[in-house]
Length: 319
Image (cartoon, rainbow, N blue to C red; front, side, top):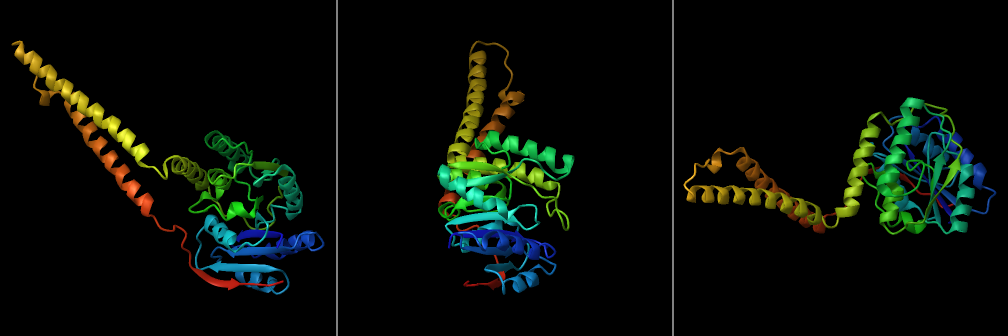
């Protein structure tokens, strides 16, 4: 198998037939032997019925979730099923063109890249709902991840097989697959400007909260990449510094009182000074942070699998 095309679907019954036909017309006479892997992410419309119908005529492997788990879960399961030398991902809303994929593979091979990401240079979305927020998001992502991509969240990407088999996409981390790949040791990342189609059917499934969630996920991913395997280095360091500040301040107040008292001067009781309670609070917080780091260290060393999803139906084709 040369190419696996992984597609996450959620309530896209209107676009599926056109999308699959478009993919087939692109690759049926090409040099690439391909398969289409569709993950129905708990659709509530007739998407699964359409997928079943299409699987009778096209090389489709598909699974259906019992409920909506999110795009990351769908991609994770799609990557598990993929057998191609190259793995492409694209959205099901007809805004990504499969005709871009052959050239992306050529660039991947020629430049020795691990993955190549699409760049929707000219977007057909709302200026204030997607264009401007996307620019802000991508600028922040470049600054945090140090990966020079103009459009990290573009759904159209092509990977070498070993990349997707060595990363774990969970939560809502599908936005940061290039960063996950980089952290897994696949740092040869490129991009290609691609044509962005206007949405033909339905409306976007992602609400305004994706911007806040995306920022929080980026912080989480940055923290996990730096301290995921060594949380004590973060919590332990901050906890120790906080504890030392509180302990040092308390010691200073006690020594100052003893010296003042020994000289027969009027002194203020330690417990009457606000600084003492600030120091006491710092000691308690420092101890809690240190213990948090210790517990997090134990959890990280004994954590199990995070990706557990219930599959309702499955289609396996051997074309």
